[in-house]
Amino acid sequence: MALADLSGNPTTAINQRALEHFNQALDDFLFFRGALIENIDASIEADPDFALGYAYKGYVGVLGTEPKDAAIAKTVVDSFLKSANLSRLSERERLHLRAAKTLLEGDFHAASRQLAEISRQYPRDILALSIGHQLDFFTGNATLLQQRIEHALPAWTREDTYYSNLLGMLSFGLEEAGNYVKAEELGLEAVERNPKDVWAIHAVTHTYEMQANFNKGMKYLDSRKEDWAKGNFFLNHNWWHYALYTLEAGGSERALHIHDSVLFTENQADIALQLLDATALCWRLYLEGHDVKERFVKHAELWRSKVEPAFYAFNDMHVAMAFVGAGFELEAETLITNREKWLMTQMLETVSNVQMTRDIGLPICKAVLAFGRGQYQKTVEHLYPIRHHLHEFGGSHAQRDVVLMTLIEAALRGNDKRAKEILSERFEVKARSPYNWLKQATLLEGLGEKLGSAEAREKAMSYRLTRG
View 1: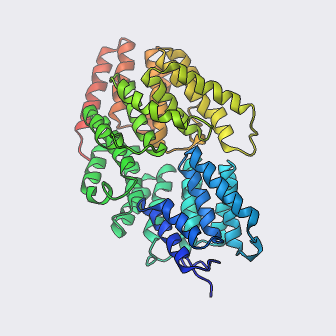
View 2: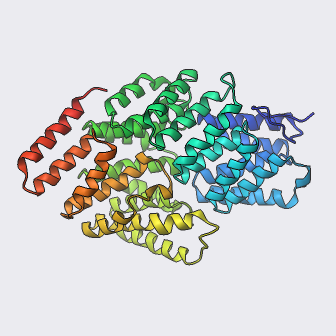
View 3: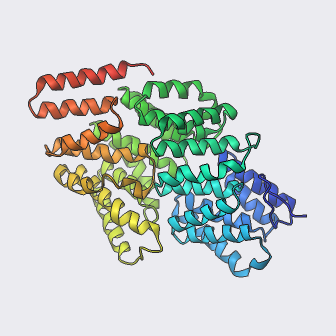
């Protein structure tokens, strides 16, 4: 009798312990806790022919955005594929191995499509759904973030163990697609069903972020602190969201405290996904004139080991920010030069990061360097043409917002005539954002409209005092 995974899908595993470790790894991934890598490796060790264990290792090796981990995972998966008898595997297992291999070869978009095909045939495959959901996030595909889960959901029942997780994923997809009301509703339902679903909590925080309901967001995170602020590996990112709320509320010192006490501590693990949050927060503070150079220096020291080989343009942006913020302009220049050389050796059709780097990553890195040098007009020239295409190199609206903030600040400092247009575009998304109104005040002041500037500042303060 075939051994089945947690969602009832049959496997060709011949060892119960292998499946137990695999199932635990699935749970680890969905709740961002436990020993994910150790459980995946243990599943393979218990059954060296367990195909899904190898596919899972391939997926996770890439999703950590650590080039060294991806290289290790590729070696393991390639070795298995060379010796495995693929004919004994189920169609679902073969499809997973194909998707993992595609992802390890650098084609994020093709792997996403292949996982979507698995979900179409096997809608109760939580591995395909959860990995596919993350790839939709990594490629900035808001449509698939929503539709991937929507299309599979009818195959699940409200009594299923991971039904709440699917609601949390769908909530995030709806938020990225701009449906904030429905996203909040489903996210809150997911958390009520399982308060430890930190991804669902995260989805709800995004809905408040995008609507500039920062006071409501802080209240929500405060009310759920026992659920998200301990016992998981996602707490840093949710604290990052809390820090963004505090910045809108005018609490830059509190944001710095969150950075120093949570996001980047002395015993902080050298993990790219956590460094992203620390660097992104400091760049926001840097744009507002805060002295965070010493913090950037510490970030840069860790980013150095992750610069080569080229892997994910979204990370490169943060590397550039850390180098520039630390005053390491030559290293930022080297990063840019190396990426330009790398592009000359790659083929667009097979490596997603080529298009991401060429079209979005490199212009942003060049803009960041220009901004650090006070070349504000040059910064605008790099960012203005790509401002509506930022999703193409991944991340969320909230994460990519730092690029728009850089563009706005450069346009204001450089007295660029497009500053009003650029700022108005952000107003269309966040009409109640104090940040927008303060920048509006700066814009009007530069135009000599003192009364309008004063009114804009009053508007910013009134929104800061508004309780969610």
